[in-house]
Image 1 (tube, each protein chain N blue to C red):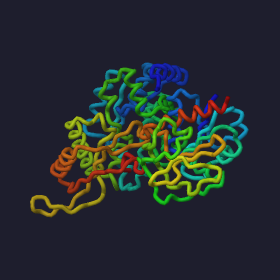
Image 2: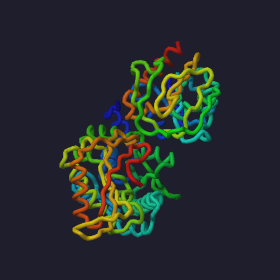
Image 3: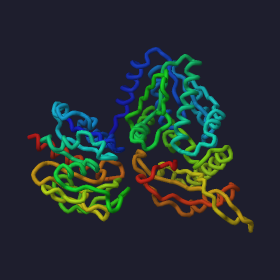
Image 4: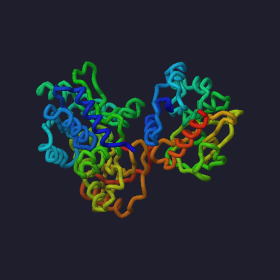
Length: 308
Length: 188
């Protein structure tokens, strides 16, 4: 097993040596990876670390408030609303790899601007092992590695050799709140990878609502800790339905729930059928644009955890 | 002395390193473009050939198989490269195989010690070994793949088609423990 206190000491020492008395910014999404990296970096360089939360317009319900409330008193915290910039660049883009690349580039643009404002020379990122493994293997490009040419910020990745389960062990050792440690992973490109086809504000809203319903019902059932991730995907497939004697023609939403230790392999477990039914019923009733809900049953491999 | 993990560009190669690290076996992951001289200079206890997407990207792995006189464990593509190096045939799998399968262990030999007659394993492959090389014996088979595991009749060279290094292969660590024991005994 990983020895968390050795790892923490080495990591802090390394960052002290690398960053010295310069300033650094960290990309803080509020997920476990960037939260752990933030605390490590702040232990290493103290107030010279500025934590930056970027709202790209593709975050979950209540996300921005949650992250701000959690970190504003713990770190030098800045929140940037860049949703216009992201959504403009994503207009009419269909290819999921293209979406990931655009999001990566806009992220870097935003961080470069912030870094200039605060005169930071380093960018700390919460990259973990599966991120760069999948990028090297050309499976999926992960948002925080898509660095354009001529990047001036030096990148520091304190947890790049860890897997998620190890990050959680380090997070506990650092005394992060249990809620952050046990939170389900949420991909950097956010809902962009859960919307098939072109991204519009309307589709983001539908996707966000469906994801909130899934989260709500999984927690009501009390099985959130046994699942690695649980979410809804808005496809661009339309299905014919009948709602209140009227013909309906709306979206197909796919539910996906998997168990995993480190995201490298994942399995769809047996799920409580009444919960699946309840989710389907609520999504089709509470979101007028959705006509049909289905459940994904594919493991990783051959599928990946997220849809796009 | 270290076990060297040869990175054949597979997604789980880094995981092999983690599995060995968790067992407290010194290990190092190296690119498959490392020259045979550099490998010998590292004086490894044994080598593990990782999986990967294509034979064209296997680098010097076929050379390591032929020229190194130490225990070798090939996983997935590594297993196929061993078969090819010793005159077996490889090709597209009749049935592509992903996620969980149960393999039948015909001969526990060194590598399957302590596991029993069957083992639940995770797989991810489009190709497999079609014919056993002449100097090899079959150790395990499954409904998706005839040659899930094999061993050289005289040398400590093992090939397995599935992935013992991923979390979902629950008894995978036993394979690494067994291989490590083989390496230690070979050293004596």
